Length: 444
Image (tube, helix red, strand yellow):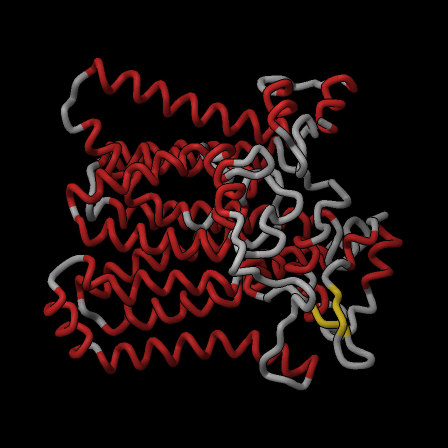
């Protein structure tokens, strides 16, 4: 039966395929640079050049593909004779199946595409991997949401997440970052957490542990998402029932922790190989300032405000009130996660996270916001009043159109990767071209 949520998912799949074959920059020689290069470089280093501790091939790539120095941005100080990749390796593991397929193809056609890790098929592999995992995350998220919400609420939530948030930009226009992969992992964790607590099967606890491991080695600060599986029973029932559940699940929890640490060992082993230490802080001079978080700037500023550039996130946050009407404890858990995560994210010294569209560090959090967002949509549409439903649908359509358009503006360098102020934001609003006079507003 073709339900509303299936139609929504099919529309997303259709658009994803369209983008793959019409918009993606497979031929763009500097598709990978800066952070994207650092996340990716494990793959050519391990499978082609057999060099993950010095990255001597980097200068060859710079010369061959006319990259600027951003392609070697990943290197940091290590022991003498070693270069430490500061970026965790989880993203490269998500890209690996597609990388290996591209490598096989390039080896079969070496005259057309050199098997060097950076020719066109490898760039296509990075694009395909991001799109595949994001769609997989949305596919699983649909199954999770249908356990709690209606077809209509689930369908609209999926559309808003796919096209109304900066997940869209980082899936299609700035590929290779860790956030789309983290988003998918968050969706998988939600699904396995719910199945573990409802079915009480060991396999779901094991899968949750494995997913938590991959989440941690993709973006270590995202370990805060462990709040969700740890507190899920308490958020969906009485405290006594939750304690009884965990007492009965001690063997499953132990296996889950073993699986978590087995995945974590992949990152620890790399650090041990390069530095001689199991634990190291690869970001060196970068860090957190927990005493002075930039929460207001991070949420509302014209520079990178999450709620300004991703207003769907604000709608989802408001939806916590609607969720509380249905499941107060679950709403409390979602709110607690958001508060802790937002505090950590905006305590980073570079709280604006360099060149980005909105706050990219909170992209994965929209997987959790899907819960209150769906609750709000269900509450609004439960009355089936056209005088309310039609304006709401128009607002949602506007939010999607705004996000798609502003993503394209950034892609065309109309808006800025960093440094936008109020005057320039509103001068460039709705434009595909700006003048030098417009850009002078950036100095105000």
